[in-house]
Length: 141
Image 1: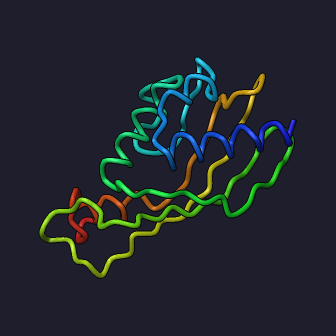
Image 2 (image 1 turned 135 degrees about the vertical axis):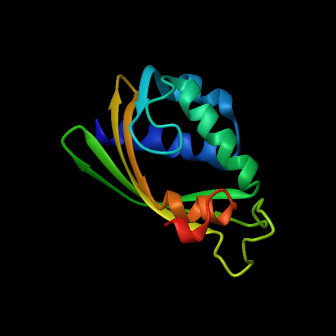
């Protein structure tokens, strides 16, 4: 399973996150896919969950590029360490400073089933990105 799971994960990052080809989610994600972490945790299932998440990120970070830093398999779970960068300035409110980085890192654990991503658990610094976008006050964190 790992080699095929790795290929599916690499394809999802390339097509959806880096190129913005949302239609790839229909092939790469199971119809009952559940995202247990991220912006829309457990609210939307299936490929639509990834499409919505990708749209939100790509609107905020139009030059988004995700790099897979490492993939490790433990049983049926693939743990992926990633870095996302934005080559263009992020959309932001006036009270957010230019000094904040356009880079974020995180970890996602992915379970594949029948050649598709069926479930994932994402861990990343959501508060820092929401601050960067001016959606929450830095004093609130």
